[in-house]
Image (cartoon, rainbow, N blue to C red):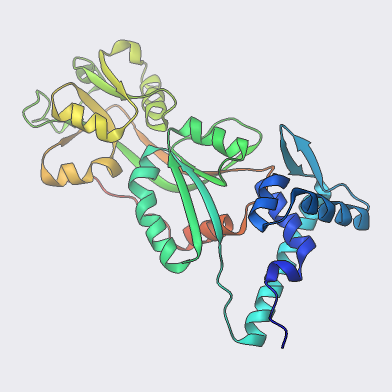
Length: 312
């Protein structure tokens, strides 16, 4: 009896086209499918000849779908999904959903939300391999735009015609001080009172810093009005600096829950400063999302991230 062929060999042209669309690169698609780059090009060219339409346009060393390519990709996914469903119904066996998911995340979602999220996601999709990097929001957006990651989790939006942002969580900022600090006995302070103390900031490009700067602008203040003791690219580093008395800091409640519960850091409200923000999933509208990325989006829709209340 003839051994069953893998799915990739049963529908070679659509699978190859889809992989090239998802990776925006023929060479990467060839590597993923264990084909030669020439074979990938030949299959795409065969589709273009059959449809009498150009499916890809080249830009900056990558390939992006044309309008016709976008339409074909949508139908290709429906065909491939139906193919998987047919095999499952006829054979009675579930074909494991596999693939690689490339993520970029800014510090708060990357360090405090992503581990639990990926743990739950991984339990449901055991065969999806996830690779994630953590940096600041602007760097994540650049990774998405360059096609280096499929999705980004960021703490702010940017005006960019290529990027699409969708809400996935809310974050609240709070002033953090160490026990024994001059502000530690107060529940609320004003911006003016805060300006009398050295402050520690996240690096430029951070969504948290951007939120803080905009909040100051709304009440007629700026960073120039503060004594900046230190700038750090790590929430953990900032917490350590606050503990050592270097200065106070505005941080996300997601990042300080353990310290607030333990009493090693204290939270103080800045009464005239609104420092709440939304966090977003960002994707490049010019690129199609690979199947693992679509699975993650569907997972987030059915498993929304709860807002963490500030610990007393």
